[in-house]
Image (tube, rainbow, N blue to C red; front, side, top):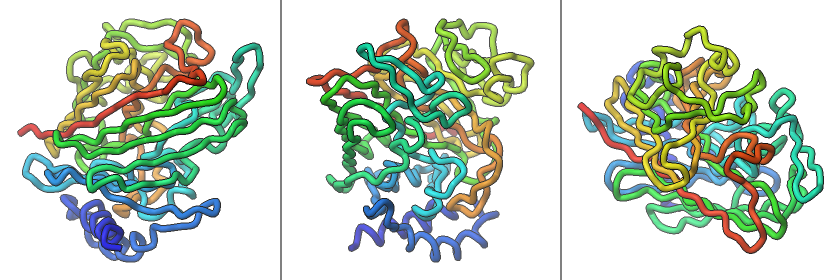
Length: 380
């Protein structure tokens, strides 16, 4: 199948060695051996690679295993292609990784649920606790660990579908989920999420791509410039569960209302930074749930600029604080401490237990719909 071989070529030649001579020697042989073996049988279904492109320099490689972004190639300030998303060369490596969320679709409920418990319509629910005493990103087997049904809609679009059965991870209701990935004309990667249910259930979907705008394996992200359109954030306790209030970012290390170097304040003596080991916090976007600009990030070496647009009310900024160099990426390098970041468009953490937060409860007969887009350009 021609598409399949094209994907392998893009993943092997672009994602592994472009714009990073220091890693070319060991990466080229690895790409030949491993990218041609990406396909794998998982839970009786075939995990495969797909590619979409806008024909203007943006190419995304995706897999139906976990609805993951495997690579995302965009031109840098010199016009050279750079893979700005961290990932692995085979489905088996994703499954075996100590960090399970690389590039993945997150659900049924993204972020944390306090003590894995919530009450809905008078019934108490307990979800597997996989993050200390709390539930993170859907429980023991979230959407990142299932094989989705895929339809290559066009050269620029991929549709994934998954039916989460009633009781999966102890969530109520049969949830029908559809995600459309589109390489847009304005050099963006757009995520359109849809879901329906036959019982009231919490839903909070997002994507957990890990970015380095200088390229996978290029070192720290602490010199990237970051601006977030948020005057407030949700402070957390020592287990990273929101306290319930919305705090001002003014005069704190969380003030990214103007562009700041990510690492310039990350080691300040601040209780919230200590709780997260750095940045791992939800920002309350000024635009509310209207579609608009949430954040802008600039790679200090590449000149690549990423703008995030969303209709979600929150944005979780995670600075790679828990990475320990335990996993070998598709470029042949390790996922070292703070060598990538995540900016997850979302509703707020623990919203199912926080009545003052925007609700994440989906009713039967209603359609969950949300859109986020990551748009790329360059600055000299």
